[in-house]
Length: 421
Image 1 (cartoon, rainbow, N blue to C red):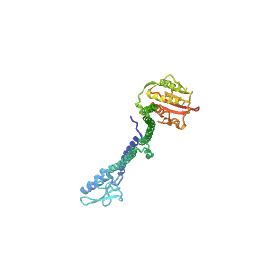
Image 2 (cartoon, one colour):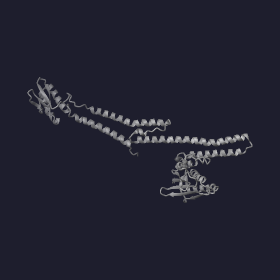
Image 3 (tube, rainbow, N blue to C red):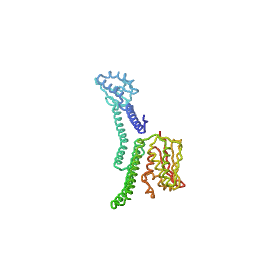
Image 4 (cartoon, rainbow, N blue to C red):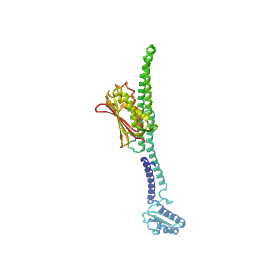
């Protein structure tokens, strides 16, 4: 069951208040109408007595005032002759309202009332007044409610049209002012969506630019080698150059495909129960062979096991890229340390991979995880996609990755990986 929201309570209270006010105003008009000139009860007695006297005579009208006197709730109607003598009813002062009546025999008498009884029909205020008041109040409330709900939606629609046209700097929430309800929450989500779309579009354009640049360089070298080979068929060393450049393009395309995979949706991840420690052991064993060429070592300190439901292929690429980067940049005859610990508080695996290389400029500690990000002295080392793939793979598993420089020199990459059942 959905819990009532702020907008729900606003609409509920507005409807309830409008209905209550309409009822109370109508009831107040009916109650006040009893004290207006033209009270229905006084008017009925007064003018019915007049009609009876005019048609049947004074003697026929006297009983009416006697019979109805108790129904007037303290209000008085008196019948007087020409000499001012009370003939029937209750005494009423001479300065009050009076009406001369002539009966069928020509005899004139006066009917007196303490106030004007109204029209001869004996009607007070119109009974249509509450209906008119209710209609007017309902119309005003409906107009206000329609305005309250529609104007922010108009701004949202205009903002979404601007975003669809590529104007990602459009913002809706500042227009809402101090309003606080679900429509403002929707405006915040729309602003956040526009910001995220702008980041994605900028990142896509930057990525396409980098891809075209990375592909153009080996293709240019291949074209030059082919041109030289055509001019001098005996220069067979050009075939080796063409082969190396084609392998470089193949590796780039493979890494781009991997990056595209890890940028997909986490729910599309094919996973299996796997011991991540065994995976780390295989990676460090393979990295030791490459490290041996630099007379370096790769050490692993880890618990017995850490079983989680993960994508083995993506995590393998993640840890392999980080470890191979550490082996590549660590100084000769040094050790790359891979330390894994299990955090029992939140049931997660923490892996720290450290090298003894030059480290990274402090302002690049975040940007090194961007695609094609390389230092000025590292343009020939890979394509700058390894850490980008590692970050996306860790995030798809609900984890996080960060880098920091060590005080004694070198780079430390920390990976926090929660256990997934």
